[in-house]
Image (cartoon, rainbow over all chains, first blue to last red; front, side, top):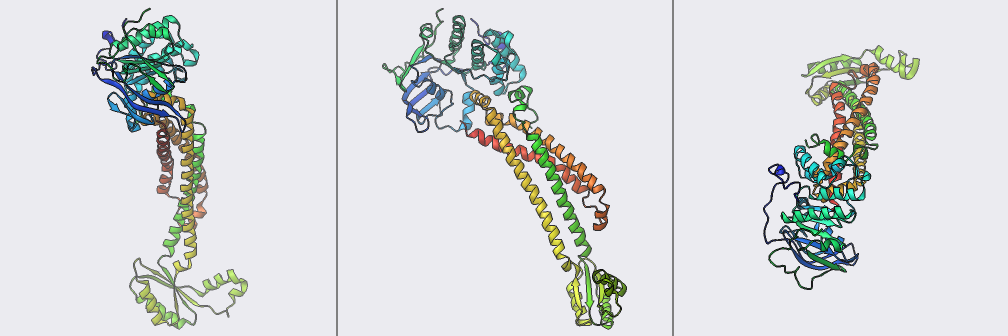
Length: 264
Length: 288
């Protein structure tokens, strides 16, 4: 299956330009990271792990285990209250906030509640990352139309989120997260509101991106989704603590886990 | 410049209706008041300048006891360098002045009158030397500067001028405070959009620019509207103010003053934009 930017059409436009991958590097490194909100108890404790660049990871755990908090740290919506956290090889726990937008542009996020901008069309929602990154309108139109077509919403480009079904909103959110071809994609229950066929399609998109070098982290309760993705590695949280009995997350082997073609 | 080059797509991100609210009307009212008060301040300042220029080099010699001394004083004054005019005030003029204050009794011929001599000096002339010369020529004569007599009036005019400009400053500060509140309100209204934008990698500048353009446009149009109404009212008042012109010897507001007043809406728009930018960036920095 070809992604919208895999064909010759996109090459050389500057929008989906290729990127040299740092092989065998860690894209995420947590070193005794803790997080608490205000003066409450720590919701994440002593997180200590490394995620290989180009890997495919599922984040699992019971409700309240701290998955959403960990995702917030990963997409830089929250800073850890202690410990060291580096993304893309740079220490970011104490980085000045002015430095964060450049890192956020390298991350694509699919929120569980979609977080689409209600008064913008599906087209404008998907185009947002490209526009924020400073691309000309001439570089935006084609890729956005293709991406919308890819998620099956070509005829809904001008529809606003309140007029879209939950599944359609989910697909717009996914298109927005991947349109700028981020190095790291973080998805919070990305198949929660779509039917089985669309869930399969979304999983195909994520695994295809992963094969192109994008690191993918998917938070999910869906064991079927995990089972359908051979090669992916599990990150399990319980009560704010990482469950890593084999130490594979603390000391990963040389090659990162790579998703293989999902089983239908 | 970025304010002027914002794209249609960026404009769609923050609909104008979400920012506007009462801001243009507020700016229009504030600018209207500001222009009227500033015009009043300028008119008072100009009047004070005209009055001061009229009396700055004018002096009087007052002699209570006789015209012999008056002749000596006049001769001494005429002999001094820098004296451009020496003229004794006719007794009829003095009696007519007294009559205005005392009634018909003031015109009585047996009422003793002092001799008053008006003296105009050229700019830079030595008034102190002239005073000493007159004192020597006519002992007991009083040498009085007109500006000393009019000092309380000039001080009052200057005070009122300063008060007017202080009021303009206060109105500007009130406008700035209102703009800050409007900018923060707009941020709250669009909190969800801003969070998404930040999450995708938008910088504070990118977010602030979306709001600033609308605030600058509103401030400019509101300001021009308020200033235009104030200008019409002032023109109507000043058009019938020939009395004020004849009193002061010059129109209370000249073209340079009018140009300064016309620049006020631009200054208001600039102030609003700068203040809004500061408020927006400060508010955005409170978030991660």
